[in-house]
Image (cartoon, rainbow, N blue to C red; front, side, top):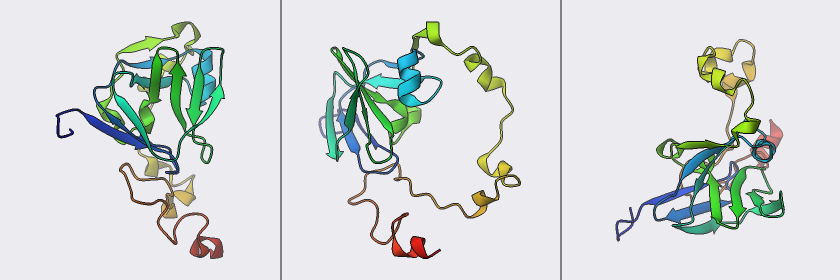
Length: 172
């Protein structure tokens, strides 16, 4: 919360090149199954939350945009490809997964169900395993080093001397 008791949220892309801050109440949270959202997210559907009643500030970098229709443009990080925004004449929606605390933002409605993939509702019934349960067939998991931005704001990113472009990583 801010000093005037307004809710605050932060988030950004996977690589940390684009970060945002939202002050004020979030609007409707939804999942969209339309084919445009499937393509824009590279996924089965796209979870979005409206920020039209809040103040959105880009705190590091800004998204690049692709105009996906005559009324909509999609914002994304041009360094890592993370989908970030859906901008239409009625306002901006942010990708729920891009928030630092996405578990706080539960969708309340599904849109575009005419394009919903037929197996989506069956996914919760599939067998479930932790990531490390696959180490037998994916041995690289044992020494995996993540270059993903952490789920909180940082003064600078990446830290000096770290990441895939650092000297120590290039030598290994």
